[in-house]
Length: 72
Length: 387
Image (cartoon, rainbow over all chains, first blue to last red; front, side, top):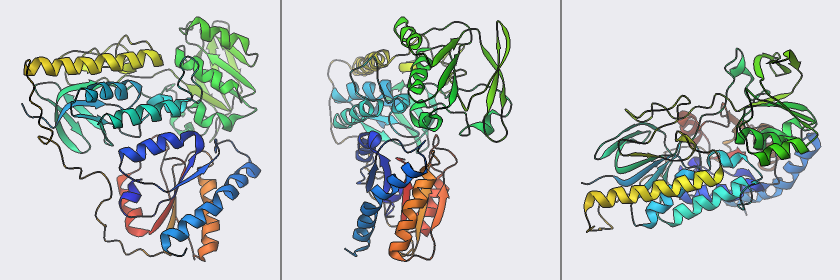
């Protein structure tokens, strides 16, 4: 979030369990973060499960990035 | 007397956020200083067994939002010293501030065993967060070290994924009968009283611990150990304030202490909430007593400009859209997740390369120099996880 405040486009991967807390923190910091929400947890996943998380978030990341860059 | 704040709260855990909200609801100017992010210990606990608040993160997000809605300002800076007085002075990462009343709700430090080689094994088998790292030990044996309510709760959390949980208790358990019953009911859990961890086993990653018990020495093969001993209160934070043997503060000198940081506090969520309410109300009463029966409220007086909230001025960076980096907080699988997503973006935008930066640990704030470098060098930084 500090990076966003400095004008850096900073998509943040957050797990769904922590989404409400991250949103509350964003309010406190007066920032509107770009969030990529993935199922919880991330730690402890095997290779296939991690690949699933990546696949699930990739489309939204690319959309978010293109939008920030003005390509969409 | 003019001060920067009416009430300054140190720590945005349960007790701190409740104290802040109570004071702010009475119209006082309240700031909460938090070194990392709001939530305290409860952020690490996925299930709350003795509270209807849902999960730890859900409860903490509600407490944070409630404090914000009441007008509390949350400042992300560390308080390194509190000087009681009229007004009280706080040395913070943002400089010195003054306050009419101070509530210290800084909680306890992370647990540690105090053994050789321990620091090199943190994150490599040693953890203090079952909710964060429990999945890493799915199907494997772990040990939890401690004797209090938090120890018992973390052990129960781990029992949901580990193959075996050995709870090593220095002395006799101090947790509630209800938690004792839940531990006894789980066949994956073994509670060993009078147990002291005397050595760590493993090269580069933990493979076991050596335990001394009343029955002699025992080698325990575990992939993870979660120490909840050696947790210290914020002794020394407040100039001249007494502390107990565990470094927890004794309120005095006009400084209020709430939650686990307070000597004699019961370690439970309900107690932390009650302590927070008591401290908030005491702060209100102390300030009212100091000003007499008539309080003139000027909503514009002493209100600091919000120069550290919202967007900052552009840093003069010359980065372009080919300058993209990954920034990991080093939580388990965060780097792998980032690299996977980064590879997709790299291919999509045909980037020649990606930059990379990492926090030393998820348990510490990002290095300011690292943030400076990233903001100057890159146009876009992909960050993980939830940090």
